Length: 389
Image 1 (tube, rainbow, N blue to C red):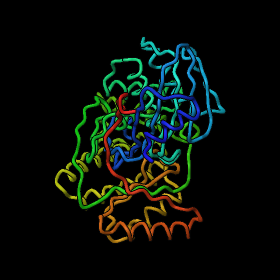
Image 2: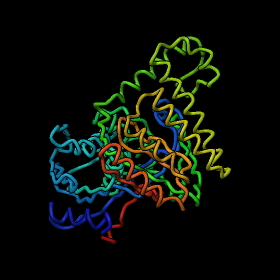
Image 3: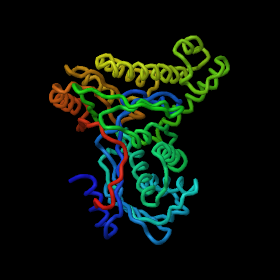
Image 4: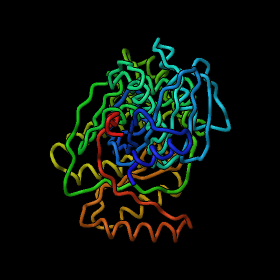
């Protein structure tokens, strides 16, 4: 059964009657460019065929009634005064979107909403942005709010920053809004310029879920961001005109790295060289050099492990196992780290051997069952027309 039908049935069972519309937004995998987005750098994500669907119907009052089919929980709040509820953390994302829409002057009144998704929570595939973007697209359609896709992504980022309390960058919301089937999205996180980069036919994007969950708001994510800001403050004193770590070249970093104390030095080194890897990756993909791109994926993982220190034993095991399978071109952790998933570039004729070997050996070494997703690269957010429900 498809996600549209599942969320529709959840709406009928929990809220009664039929929804007026259903919105969908995908999860994402970042191929390369980790922890660069909040440093105004470059990223290269894809939208994947794991998504969040929301079914919506207007009400005649100021109350929002929500139901999460995944958690079998409901929640209510007044749209003019949303408040966080620690017992219903999943509801903070819709509340944050409502808060931001109203803060910029759009009229959002009461509504009923059911939510269902198959993006694994806490796996680094951006289930939070998928919820935010699906809700924002749904509410904008329901209440005739004229927001462009880029504006929608920025609004959802503010919802997560200001209401949820996670200082995420723009990448996740941007790819959920603007993904294109069969393409990666090369995004400049400073000016939001982007282009779609066609992907390959002979290799697939494969995600391995380590089974180790993490909570960004309570992890070292915000600490890493603060360390990058400290590096920027110190380097600004000697390198004129830099606004973010993305402005620091590898040569400038090597010349002035002595100004930075550890671990700030290593954090900055990762960001500086990761931006270079993204730029080289786009060139390699456009030239059809998948082997060269795969080598950069491995380099990225080593940097995330050693310099940024956001990997972990399970993620390292997954990359090691993947690298030992003939036909694996590259592997690295994806997302913020501290658990979650790896992304792998695997030749299509090696997919069976890859999944069998990595699944068996990972469980043998960790005792954790491994989930493996061979991903289709899909479109960004969309609305199911009212007349199709």
